[in-house]
Image 1: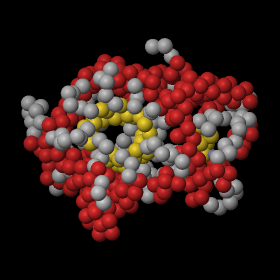
Image 2: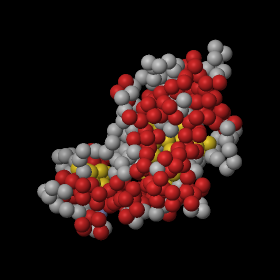
Image 3: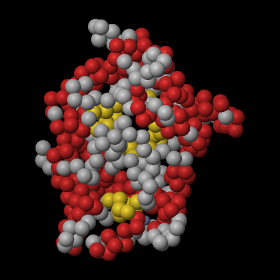
Image 4: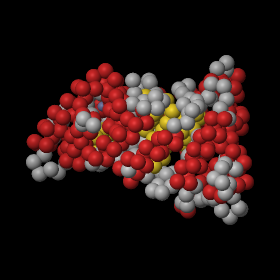
Length: 407
Ligand SMILES: [Zn+2]
């Protein structure tokens, strides 16, 4: 079964998950989000008792992103990761010469950085608990330690753009160091964060995979910068599939850090699971920090696409799409009523329900999902005479082509 890793960004999302019908999932929270609202997310993680992962988000310290420096969490993470001890007081970037010596071997600073990032993931939830006395009841419960340990430890990672040889070496040294520091039962995951342009460069992909093929690595997260499955051309979808297939030859679990339904469909080609948020966050630019959307979006289950909630009836009517009759949709307030929060919540719960069903379908009848996508695409295309809505359903055709393509 493809695994679903729900990425939390705001506190109230946890309540939506608990109240929805979804059961099989893990939680992923980035360190930036955890440091923004430590108490809220620690509480959420402890309450759900589901496996969780903390994404250390280290790439932002290797690249100059001035707009992030003023964020509250930035200085906190600098402290936790010991970056304030590596860089000069006015700087916030980790210079490469601090991580690699002239012979391109890892320095002691790289080692202590990796150790700090791992310790952060191991201990941060516990230390937040310790800071907040109201969590005492959790500390005394018998299975506290398993509740507080992350499912995987993510090795520090940096972005690979075009011609990023040195950063690739840094990443590899970080992974090796993390493996050496692995403790009993821990699983170390590497992140392959690459620019989208690299997807098309077969030799570069091969080089990265061979470099990251390290004994002791337990699995991989793939993050292709701003790779939007919905608007990607067939060639890009195929290039991503090729990356997954090549990586899967290493016989280790692979997750897409930010993906959607297309990634879930790649399960049969070796993708173990997908991370995304509740009805958003299915692709991401690694150097932009964004929260939730300003407009309510509704996931239309037949065209498998998010549409503006305000246009739902118009789109469903024109394309002759059956309405969802789940209990959340029945409760959905009229578009005209001023209840943004309620709309957002019910659209979110509806989305989780549909996504859980889709994952189940992919596991058991993935051929049926594809033929259904094809049929809905043909119907929509026929009814949408002036192609006013094609951006909402075109992906059905390209996803189907990319999955069924004979490579
Ligand atoms: Zn529904």
